[in-house]
Length: 43
Image 1 (tube, rainbow, N blue to C red):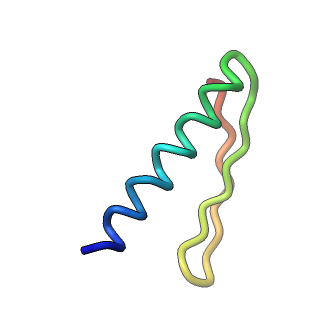
Image 2 (cartoon, rainbow, N blue to C red):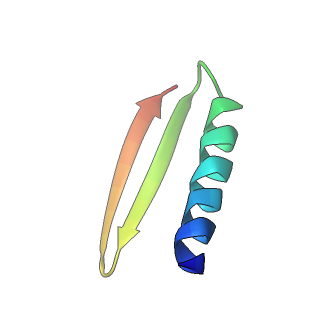
């Protein structure tokens, strides 16, 4: 159960970091095992 709380804390931190770049293009790299996916967003 403690892992779930750690994941929520990480997601909140990521959200805050992305919000700090409002109006800019942000590139995210999602890692799921061996697969990586890059996403470009304008926030």
